[in-house]
Length: 427
Image 1 (cartoon, rainbow, N blue to C red):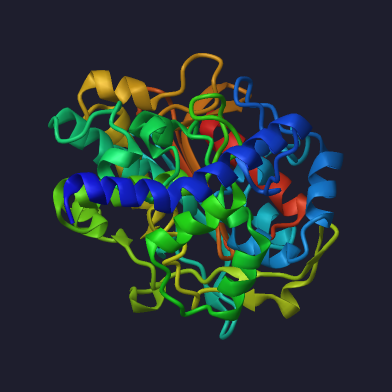
Image 2 (cartoon, helix red, strand yellow):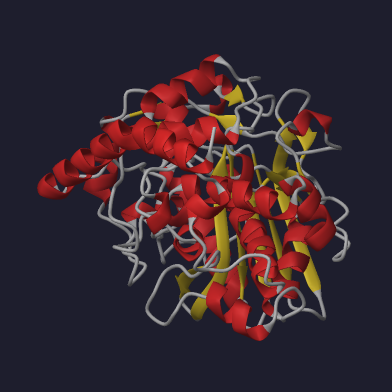
């Protein structure tokens, strides 16, 4: 088949899909309603970083048919809601990991690293069966913190002129995304592509629960999002979606001719000596790690750990470039410090990763308000584990925290937020 014939054939093939895409966008724009995950930064004002109201959160939770599964699985979700929407500034004078465990989490850890000294604290259990204590060096799923790693790889390729921020999805993954010629690498990094989040799809979530060992292909994940239709026009507004980073992973593989996992190892894990960090959809093959637990949940009320499901055996190929990194608190701290101190990217590209003043998200890094100023980093929520990696803008003071319960109760979430604030601010 000639190039012209192939192009015409592809245009005919995707014409109905593009028409459906446009119709769904127009319908959504008219009603101004967008399906949102309750653990998703879509509930946070992209300009000010303010959480949505608690009633809106509760209503969203009640509206999802597979509530507990979606909460436990949503890779898009950071702690933006868990530790933002229920952030309580009052409470114990000296927040601690014990407070998080006392509030209902199986285990919790925190690491504070200011370059000259390091403090690590743990409480509770890494594994409930056998009552295995949580250790500060245990590995855990970092969820959406994976996005920061992937963003670094993409921007390194930009610095090497192997990619450009203005390159389109259509250039690197032709024929996959309707209107892919209007969606750029920059928009994927910044979550302004307008693409839906595949993790919001209830039927998809049911399938991940029913088939925990299934190996999902990136194209399948993108297909789920495309079936949902767009949530905005490309570049129109911030709309957090793991779909963006799945596409970025595909772009990296096309641009380099090698796997995303290999690029992460060669460019970040090995050079920084992150010996306990890997791109591991199957955590069971890892060394000692903290298991993630999913308690029951009903209308926003989180149940007892006695009936919590161990989610550590679930394959995270469905999270892939959006959430499949496994790491430790120490390695995350080292990575974030190296990144913000300019060891991984030239200044001009690192500046693009940082959120602009007044914005919540840059190109792979988020901003978090604290009592003592703004923290830079990312958060993650995946398969029974919530985590946060924060740093001062200069990379000199870093805080990493983890709790191995998702859903997390409001009281435990509030205790975790207090712990993060106090640790970051030096209380």
